[in-house]
Amino acid sequence: MAKKAPSPMDTIVSLCKRRGFIFQASEIYGGMGNTYDYGPLGVELKRRVKQAWWDAMVTSRRDVVGLDSAILQHPRVWEVSGHVGGFTDPMVDCKTCKGRFRADHLDQVACPMKPSKHPGECDGELTEPRSFNLMFKTNVGPLEDSSSVAYLRPETAQGIFLNFLNVMQSARLKPPFGIAQIGKSFRNEITPGNFVFRMREFEQGEMEYFVPPAENDRWYAYWREQRYRWYTDLGIRSEKLRVREHDEEELAHYSTATCDIEYEYPFGWGELEGIACR
Image 1 (cartoon, one colour):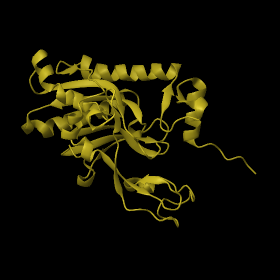
Image 2: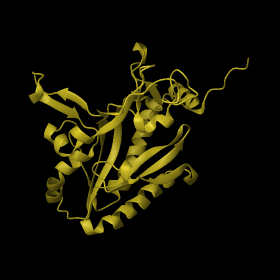
Image 3: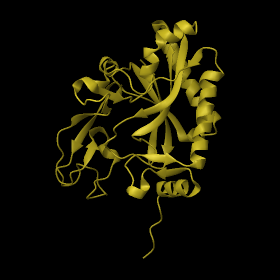
Image 4: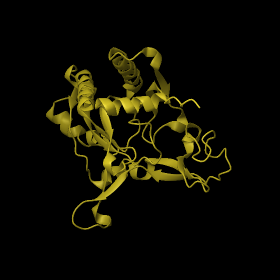
């Protein structure tokens, strides 16, 4: 019987480990889901991509400045922003295989017991969707009670919003202007990702551009074009890229308009970055 050829994704994962780009985190203890370590070549590649992003978004512009905000913020930040109540994914459980899946991504995963089918298409019975908050909760200080609860940030944007006035006054700026930062974010992803796509701990570059409300549409279109061009300037083929607008049901709780710049990975189309009009 002929040996089954490895999938493109398996080939990529094997190459990354063999060449020292990316390793499974805690591998000698069996690994930990959705967590990876960057090896000697991986950390250099990531550093260069980060530098290219920073050069394009901050260094080369007079209307954008940088920031490095704290990972831990006052818990009220996440309550007021809507993350405590609204930063969720709809999840369903299979009563047969005990698996847990995103209710809105069932057509993208295989049933663990019948890989040729999607969850819900087999004999397994799915529960009603339930909201699952993606933020990691921790405690600050010597006591673990409700008064010491804190969260690892799920995005870097809130640190930018908190420092809007500080930056505007100290840098002597006025809208339109932007604040950018690169830093770690954390999301308690329940469903497994595809290698380093959708991890629990990841680094993101984020820029918030503040404009008068009457100019929202013009600047939204401007940044759509600018960000798409950045990827093609990096050398990514345009046929592997697309811009996808979110419909009303897909919009995040903070957004009035959003589009994703997506790349065609071996497993299908997936988000490289999102551009949102908040």
